[in-house]
Image 1 (cartoon, one colour):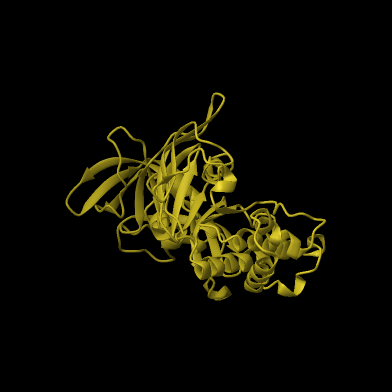
Image 2 (cartoon, helix red, strand yellow):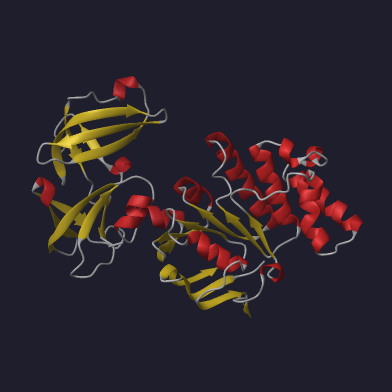
Length: 366
């Protein structure tokens, strides 16, 4: 296992800065995810760790060794690509054994190590089958086995599940996590899928337009986003512009201009992100944190509205409520407890934003 340190990493392609001044430390045995939309720099960063790109500026360190310009084959990393990159004319055994043959491992040891890793990915019975005759999920397991069999210090995965259907993605998430825990290998995972990031990661780095916006545990990223991009990209949220109004020791008050009312927020770092005096501010309220009632709620931050749309998703019910005080729609999410609990379109309701569930964040310009 290795610690990976990225020090002030920048990658230029001509005049375009794909990655800008990234500083990260990924600990030994950690499952670390690069998360962000397409074109945000996450795969470019992964490729600099793998050695496929060299940084324009900055250093890549494995433990205390400078690997910045070391070639990929000398980094002892295992890579799993989005398109699997398997050899279709070879069998499962031949694909998995390929890296060991390149390293001139003895035939006996190759057979032993390939059989062992195929057992761990539950593919030993397919050892002599052509990979072109396997399903997508099975091919993904072969790609994983090929990366693991060389016993890498670091496992790199570039959106490995994006070509699979939803049910198979769920199964493979669990499989990858099981193998990572079993091998105790430092793992860096690239994805644009927030569910993958939240369910699999020890820590997440959220990328946007070449910048790392925030690094933290899944619960930190979800509950305490540092800006409006992270709040909106991770999970679902209601996000509206607000302006600072006043404060005391317990609460800060913000003017919710769109509905011409004041919102009180607990004056803690959990509820209010760091911001500068000239920052534009936004209020983020997760749909599951909002209280809704058909009768008046005698609490702070209560607004009257009308049910606009009800969406049944199976495990939960999404309710969209148009506020009377302005042209604002609130999304509320409740666990599905049966049709008798669903609100009806056109019903008048009262919506409350609990003061300890609101998050105030600065707005970032892309």
